[in-house]
Every structure is written in structure tokens, then in C-alpha cells.
Image 1 (cartoon, rainbow, N blue to C red):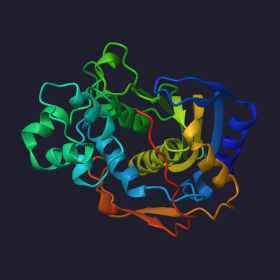
Image 2 (cartoon, rainbow, N blue to C red; image 1 turned 45 degrees about the horizontal axis):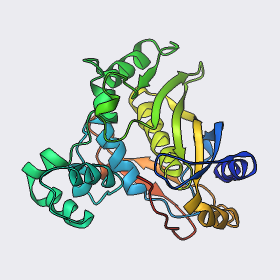
Image 3 (cartoon, helix red, strand yellow; image 1 turned 30 degrees about the horizontal axis):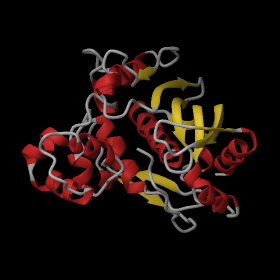
Length: 288
């Protein structure tokens, strides 16, 4: 995963200091691109421990079109919790609950979860129902029936609904490409990338998607190409990324998918991460 460390160094060398929506401040570079070859291993960052279980559950959550955090919370995945909590704090039902208390109510109270666990029409909604179109089902069908098309695209950025989302999509659009010799590639355009916290998650997430789509379509996953618009390091993550730059990457792990029948039927237990060696985790606060 030297490509990831190169991205960090590139932003530190060439980025500019900017104020941002969260008030934290960033070092930002516009327009970066990294390429990961899945034939050499699964691109899960090894210079810190990455929460692979969360990556898998989130991707399965996207594929089934879910937009409520309850599935994630029930599976101990907390990467989306802050956004609905901030919405809840502005509601008349807020009585000073802490974030952990809010999450406990999501777990235990279905009616509360249905109301306050909802993120709006975020990724899963747009993938499976973009103004009435199931983009994901059409993508799979078209990859199987017209593999060399230049239209294998899914957009999560829906201008008609973006203002209804708790967080507008950062990973906004992706496109598949099928080679004549049976490989499948995926390019993601990400409008905004938190390079310390979010980007390792995104790299592995879309590499998993590439793997699953390849299996569904009888194709071999090859390149994940990650294009980022505003690639940024938050000012309160500078110590963390400098620490990562001192660490030598380990060899990449692999993944195995067991009992595969359909991309729509894959469960967390079917996905095995093999030989993941990594340096210790590095904590950092999410900017909301």
C-alpha cells in the first residue's frame, strides 16, 4: 500500500491550508489519482489497523439499499452514528442524551430507530432507487449482456435529493470497465476524501465491491482506480499521518468469498480476510 503513503506525502508536499465546513481546517490537494492492482493482494492499508468488519457490513448495507443505521449499529459498526445524532439533537425529542445513549436507543427501540436512525436518501437509496431506477440491478444486467459498454456507471449524487441527505455522498460516482481478456476494473470519483480516516475505508470498500461484482459476472477483478476531488488531511490528523509515514507496509492480505450464489445474497460470514498483517491502530476524531 505504498500508493496510500504516496498520496499522504503528496498532499503534505503540495496541498494548501484551508478552512472547512467542520471548522477543523485541512491541508487539501484537488485532483489526485491512485491505482491498486487486486491481483497483487487486497488493498487494505497495513500501516495502521483498518476496521474490515465495518467495511464489509457497510458495503452489504449499500447493496441492499438500506439507509438506516440500525443494521450497522446492531452489527457494532458505528461509522455513521454522528450524523443522525446531530440531527436528533435539533429535534424536540432531544433531552440531553449522549451519543452512546442515542445509539443504545437505536438498538433497543425500533420506533425510535425508524425515526431517528434514518440518514435520508444516501448511497443505498440512490444505488437501488435513483428517481425510480434500480441502478445496481441495471449495472449487473448490463455487465453480463453488454460488457464492453462505456455506460457501466452508478451515481450516488442526485441533485434532486442531495439536500435531504444527512451527509451528501463523498464517493459520488463509479464506473466499471471490462477488458477483452476477462478482467474487470472499477474507477471511483470521490468528491471529498478524508485521507486519514475515510480513504483507507473507501479503498477497501470499493475493492470489495469490485471483487463481488467480478464474481457475479464471471470476471476477474483487476484495477481499482481511486480519483479524489478534494483530497485532504485534517489539521488534527497531522501527527497520525506522520506516524504512518514512518511505518513500512506489510505484504497485502487476500480475501476469500465462501458459498457465493449471488451478489444479493452475500453475508458478512461469507467474506474471509486472509493473512492481514498490520501495524497498531491509530485513533483520530471524525470531523462532522
